[in-house]
Structures are given as structure tokens and as C-alpha cells.
Length: 375
Length: 134
Image (cartoon, rainbow over all chains, first blue to last red; front, side):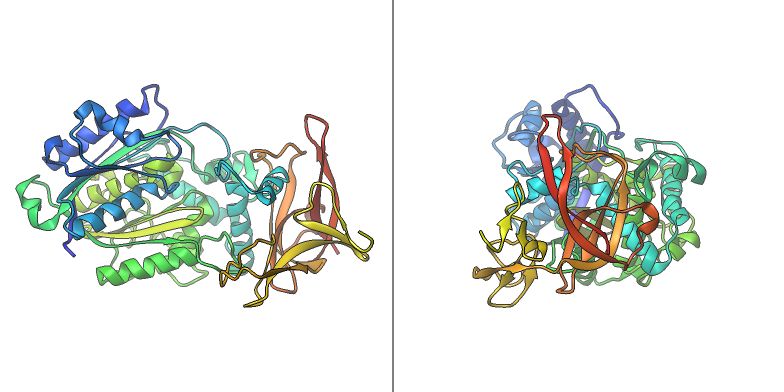
């Protein structure tokens, strides 16, 4: 297997846009090519991540750049689609099929609570939906309630995740919210699903982000910027756990283990992490699942300030999903863009000093990916 | 249907037995895994010989939440409680809870009830299963 590196990265501030997703996607793709020092004619293949945005969206996005007959793959793996596309591209580069590829993640979203978006649900699921059992905030609220019972995690600690990530997001010009929230504001915002208040739930929004990946051996032909190595990557789907049929722990632990092993490193080696904080409690659980602290001590790690910029393992320097935003198909690509900027030393006021090893953790209901990126 | 009766609208999930309603679990005849809802393939071993397994009416509350913002397709009153109840056979059931806030705590004993939950905008009554403090 050849090694793959990230040559170029670009994104637009996540938020709400009038422009078509096709225009936004084309513009962002060109920005990633420019950042990489690569021309469209050099690209061997492209991967477009999106969630239910339409038929062959990737082809429509890249049409204005000039149709060249290259393979363009549309990837829908929920909020984990962006990193899924990268993992597919990494495999193809590794196998020698392509030398240089484009990844583009795009999404436009409506407002409100997301549920499972399967178009043809079985009857049993339809009844459960009608009974109001299937929604993401309630799933995470129940994870929170159990974590509080088992580990002594407090509502203040949950809210503090949001305070921390919004503090980071206020330093990031690409963040959707871009403002700080006090603990009182977070706790006092509208209750969505007890104990999770509105500002502990990632906002919906629109977004685009793009990357250029290539084989390590040809990277020096292009950009003057340091290539970022894709040292480890793993994608896991749901693991059969009878007592946790839709949980978030088992497949994260599995994916992290596989990615660390591939990269030959462990959680103690990480300098910066972008993890999937779709709800405040998720960040605390994933500190534990990614091995950053023992099980049950996620709240303590947060209280120590370890995961703030300036702490020993800053998490979600971009603002995370809570502040930067979570436009599903673009979310994972956006996480990687942040880690690329951090490892290049381009992260401005939220820069982690001398960051060498970064991790992205990206999930959706039944899929989880973990990647280790190094400079 | 002398001994058991399917509950209208819930025929895939609930039956009414002599001692009251019960949830219809699936049991794999190969690996003995028990699951809910019943499905035609065993999620543990892919076995396709699945028999119907009446589940216990009582269990313990594993976790819960009070939902303020209604999810898609739910037309009932809010806020309302949902939770996960673990049954003695090790099966976790996601269900509405019929209880006052102060009566809910993790690990307390709960029992199954089947009853109308709400009428939707078209006037159709939704019968569902819930757990209440035992």
C-alpha cells in the first residue's frame, strides 16, 4: 500500500446560504485545488459526500469545472460521509489506482430535530416513530442521564462542553455561531430533551468543505505547503451489543483501536482532536471511547481544562459541531480541514502550538470513522 | 384467538395474553438470542429460524428523558417521557413512560401497559405500549 497525504484543504463558513449547493461546491472545490497547487486536469477521480441531496450531485457540482470523463463517486454515509469518502479515496490511492483525487462534502439542511431518514421504513419503525421514540436529541439525552447516574457527570459539566467549544468557535472565522456562551446561557436555553438544552445540540445549517489527496511519493511535485499524512484510518459500522443497540461507544472504541494500530500511535501521542460533539454529552463519552481518559472520567478531564486550547489535549478547536456547525455531508470534511490547518500552523488565534499528530472522529447513527493525521 | 389477541395497530409488537398485554420478542432457535422487535433474521448469528417469544411485563428503568421538542411523526402531547427498560431476559425496550417526574429514577421497577396514547390530527387513535412505575 502506498501512503496517502492531504495536499489541499478549503471550506466555506458553515451557516445559511442562498446560493445553490452546486455553486458552493464548485467554488469550494476550486479553492481546495488552489490550496494544493493542483489543477483540475491533474485530478484522477472525485468523491462527493452528501446526505439525500439528489441524484449524481457530485457530477453536477463538478460539471462547471469542465467534464473530463473522470470517475466521480457519490458517497452517502450520513454525517460520517465526508470521512467515509476520504477512506475510500485513501484505499484507491494506496492500491495505486489513482494518484490524486478531490473530496468535496456538501449539504443544505432544513431546521428542526433530525430523525432516522430512511425512505421506506418497516412497519415496526413507523409505529415507534409515531410513538415519539426515535429522535437524536432524546437518544443522546438518555445517554447523558445514564452517564450522570453511573459516573457522576453533572448538568454543569454537560453545559461546559458547549461553553468550551463556543469559546473556540468564537476564534474561528469558519464557525457557524462564532460567539461565546456563558454557562448560564447554555443551561438557561430552551429545553430540548432533558437534560439537553438547545445550546447543547449542534445547529443545522448549510456547508461545503473540500480536500485534495495524493500519493505521498508525488506530493513534492505540487504545493509548497507541508503535506499531511493519513497515518491511520478506520471505518466501523454498528457492533452487535444487545444492551446498547444504537449506542455510540462500541463502534467508536473499535474504530479508534484500529486507527491507532494502523498509525502506530496511541491517545497519549495526540496533540489536537476534532471529535463528533453533535450533543454535549457525546464529547464527554468520546474522551473515554478514544482513550483520552479512563471510562467515567470524561467530566473530570473537561474540568481540568485539558481539552481547551492551551490544555494538554485540545478538543474541537474549530468549535466542534456545536459551534462550527453540522451540515451532515460536509461535517467530516470540515473536521479534517481544521486538523490540516492545525498541523500546518495555519489555525490563527486558536492554533495549538507545535501540533504534530491530530485525530478526527466522525459518526452517524450506525457508522463511525476515526482517522489519525500527522505532519 | 381465545388465549391471545393482537392489539389493533400494534399487531407486530404487542399481544394480549391471559395475564395482560406482552411485547412480542423474537428468539433465535440456533443461538438463543432474544431481541425486540421480532425480526426474521437473528442479529447475533444470522439464523433464520426465529420463534415468537413473549417478553416479561416487568423490568428496570435503565435511563430516561423528558422530551420537550417533538420529533418528526409524533403528534401527541408534550413534554412527555421516554426511556429504556431492561427486562429480566436482558432485552432493552425503548418506550414511552407513564409517570410523574418525581417517580422516575434509574433502576426502579417498571411494568408494561398498553393503551391509547393520543389522537392525531385526523382523529385516528394511536394505541401504544408504555411502562409505568410498578
